[in-house]
Amino acid sequence: MKFVDEAPIIVKAGDGGRGCLSFRREKYIPKGGPDGGDGGDGGSVILRAEVDLNTLVDYRYQRHYRAQNGESGRGRNCRGKGGDDLVLGVPVGTTIIDTDSDEVLGDLTSPGQELIVAKGGFHGLGNARYKSSTNRAPRQTSPGTEGELRNLRLELKLLADVGLLGLPNAGKSTLIRSVSAATPKVADYPFTTLVPNLGVVTLQKYRSFVIADVPGLVEGASQGAGLGVRFLKHLTRTRFLLHLVDMLPPDGSDPLENALVIQNELSNFSPTLARRPRWLVLNKTDLLPEESRLSVCQKLVDDLEWQGPVFFISALTKEGTDKLCNEICDYLDDCRSREAAFPDAAQAERDMQANMQLEAREQIEKLRLQRLQANTAEKEYEDDEDDEGDDDHEVEVVYSP
Image 1 (cartoon, rainbow, N blue to C red):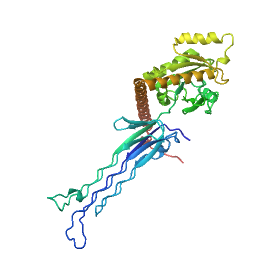
Image 2 (image 1 turned 180 degrees about the vertical axis):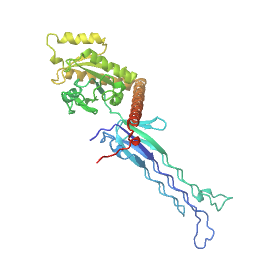
Image 3 (image 1 turned 30 degrees about the horizontal axis):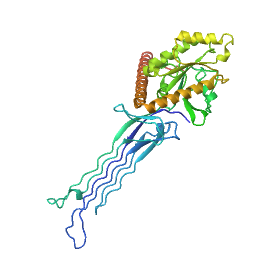
Image 4 (image 1 turned 60 degrees about the vertical axis):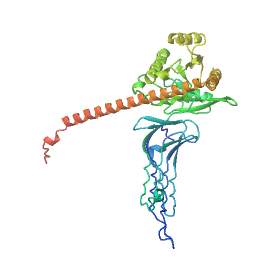
């Protein structure tokens, strides 16, 4: 299935039904009073988080959605039937944004959570509502109000506890395959990972966490190079990051320079995400000579002036992965306990995630506009060249026999 993490849609709630103008007419009651009923309320458009969905691909092919209108009222004080709500399923982790105002309407982060994105119109009133001691035969009714019309943008951000960062071929996909049941593509060439992958790491009963792998970054990714930073937004919901560094890159590059590239691109994308807790994971250490392995790794840590946790692993042989996973579980347990005990800590976490997501949207939109301007300028330049070189309209072509 194609992975789609953004989709623009247009939703229209149902209009309210019109009120009825009617008077009671029965045998022996020639002058019955007003009995026009109210109309029905229009249906609303509701988004619901579904665990069975993991992509927004369905919303790429159908973008217009409309709820049912309310029916008009009838005589004998019969009220019109209300319109049915339109419930649209989206993956857990979907953010809903109003395109016209850039307002974040809500985040659907738990299964079954619902959000009304377009409210149905209010019903119209029948003439029975307007009768009074001074107005015994009202001929006044009201139409139902229109349902809300909204242009929305759906953004999917995967829900994970841990996010993986690194250059292409740093071993991120291999690590997920080693510690979970996920089977992302692994190959000896760059950009084998083209879409985010999730893996559930289970150490023992009731002790597990979710790890997310995004496509590798390259130098200049914050300016749109490679696969750009589009998928980095999926890391804005994670608790902390694992920065994987290949200690023996196949292209002969310097691991120190590679680590600095990731740090710079992360800071350019989102300063808040760059301040997120991050652990350094030195991968493929089994390929280094055993007698110099520790000194080489320690030199890299010293040169980076790294202050956080450091792990030496081999994702392929699973050397050091058990220790890493246990440390991750302990850290996540501490985070959850602290947030449960201190509401301020939980609110600070939510504020930080909201700030990261805002910075991510702004950076992605900035890159989109830059790319659009560059394409426009290139097209204008090509058109100018075509006009200068195309002078067939000034030349009479004669074919000689």
